[in-house]
Length: 123
Length: 110
Image (cartoon, rainbow over all chains, first blue to last red; front, side):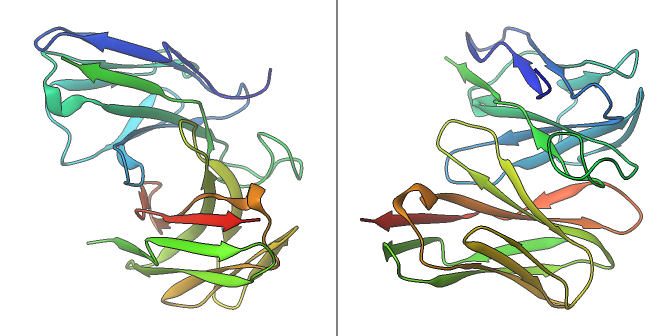
């Protein structure tokens, strides 16, 4: 499979608990993005990595959120002390920074390819 | 601050009835403008990237165009399977933070 994968697909937790999500990008992609999406809205940028470096983080992102990409491959997003307002779909996307083969996942310049998302419900 | 506004919020078409979706953007300098399609419960699916005013891209019944302030997604003779939410996004020159609009929900009736 050459697509972006995310785990778990669904997570139900109680308020105050910590949760961690994982994203595995397309193998040759060096950029990885995290987004949050609520019903009826477009994806909201959270943060992005180039290789293992976290280059930008949304100013709106609470200190309860942290993301890592330790070896420049998979990434994790942790939410500490979850709140009901954290309920959303968490999307991961990857892209490559150089021109690649035309067409198909991983081809082209800077296009982001998304995973299926992790749906978080905080009770 | 970068902004992306999509209109209309929802669009209902009969099969074969062509129309256009609008994406207006405010950004200091544009690195790229992207169009995505999203089906319910799924991640967005990449459609097009546009880099400079005057550029056009086509794929099947879809055609995307770009000016200095807005982009249009033209849908020619749509089919029911084109029903989805269409998202527009921009990246500002100098970085890779991506700002999405709220999307246009397209319904195509047979």
